[in-house]
Amino acid sequence: MPPVLSAEEIREVNTRYHDVAADHYDSKWGIDFGELGGEQVLQKVRKVLGAHPGPFESSLEIGSGTGYFTLNLMRAGVIEQATCSDISPGMLAALSANAQRLGLEVSTAAADAEALPFPDESFDLVLGHAVLHHIPDLPTAWREFERVLRPGGTVLFAGEPSRYGDRLATVPKRAATAVAPLWRRVMRAGPAPPAEGGAPDAALESVVDVHAFAPGELSEMARGAGLSDVRVIGEELLANWFGWTNRTLEATADPNEVPWAWKWYAYRGYLALQRVDRRVLESRLPPAIFYNLMVSAKKPL
View 1 (cartoon, rainbow, N blue to C red):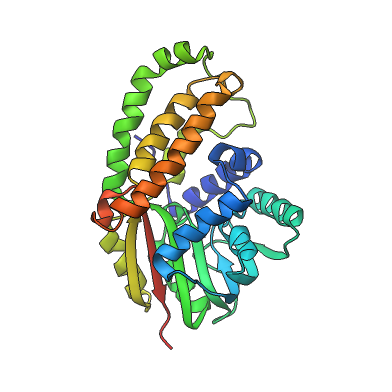
View 2 (cartoon, one colour):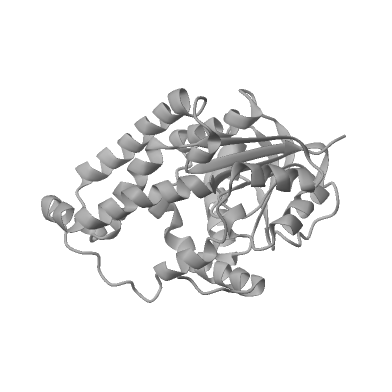
């Protein structure tokens, strides 16, 4: 069982963990800034903001990481001027390098979501991807999101783990762990080498991930901060079962010995099941059953 940490300790561990993870974050999670990555991000945003989101004159991303959401949305013309914040300077450095490579101008700020260093009513869009579950004091953070948002502005957060979906995800993880030795023999791959000194401590993952959510909890936090038009939807069920199975298997093997054909199968299979989730399941099943939740809201005029 992970240790019980104070809010300040959680922030410190998150900073340390993500600073170390920044150099290989994009490759680990398959983050793409080309046509495919842009379409994936747009598909997510369209689910809650409609077929033609934006354009938003100015945006603030919370926990922006290496820029997956903001940079892809800028390339798609959804965002015009972007500010990216993160508690991790290492992540912001990786984001700046990605932005420079893509020819995009982005402002960055090392910032705690619970005390944003921006004036009131500064942005038309406040967004984030897979960040809320890292923040210790969420009610305070939501009040900050509302404070820096202009009247009529939009809040959008995606990629947040649902409590029930997170429990469901333990099933494929456990199954994959059990069959991993046989899978490595079939793949002719050796076991994963010991973690190097620069690799993030896997044990810290259970510490930096502070929350999992019920859909109603996200709604209540948004409304409690004074936001309206709140909407929560679920996404990715089959795709996450498939993805977690493959990631768990791959984590046990030497990455240099996992066959290219397997990686291609895992990648294409995940994308195919994303389409099944999006076209068939997400509109028919309750949000709580999905692995990820998305929440959007507006600041009243």
